[in-house]
Length: 206
Figure 1 (cartoon, rainbow, N blue to C red):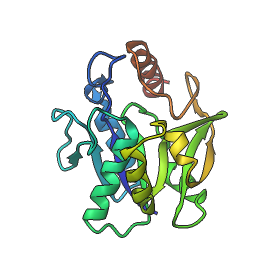
Figure 2 (figure 1 turned 90 degrees about the vertical axis):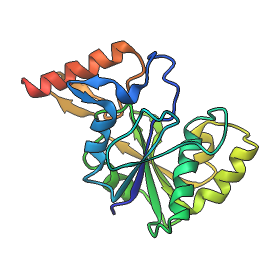
Figure 3 (figure 1 turned 120 degrees about the vertical axis):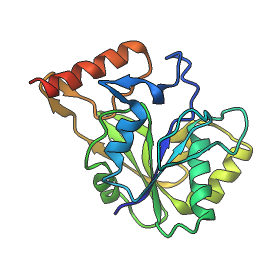
């Protein structure tokens, strides 16, 4: 499976103070790191961002179709809508956040093994925690998601995912020279950026 994918970069980055997608980590923007991780695994990449400065050459940027920044579910909705409008024939779409620089190289393969049919979803899990922004979404979920966002009982991704046939897929910790690392470690604050750099420098200079 090489599904289309959306990189979720539509957040306000309020805890970081500047757009996370454009932060440099070891000389590379976070958005470019995510593209490099996903491009070998996916057939088509789009970026969900409401900031016109967040762009990658050759990739399409799509904004939310709902006002007032309703969160990552709006990014999923925008990407699923685009795929429907452009006649996408794949059954599923991958979602991944822009702030997880250590996404596994076998992310799609592992999630795909957790699917149970074309209308099912698979969500990544590390430890005992779901990672709802890292998931394979059935394209058939678009009508349900559209109705949900028009009168949302909740904007939490897990709550919506649980309305689908969804299976959590466990991922092991990454073994690095600096110690075990959650593959879905995410960068929210400046201190997290320093932690990520520590792991990268450890890999480059074992």
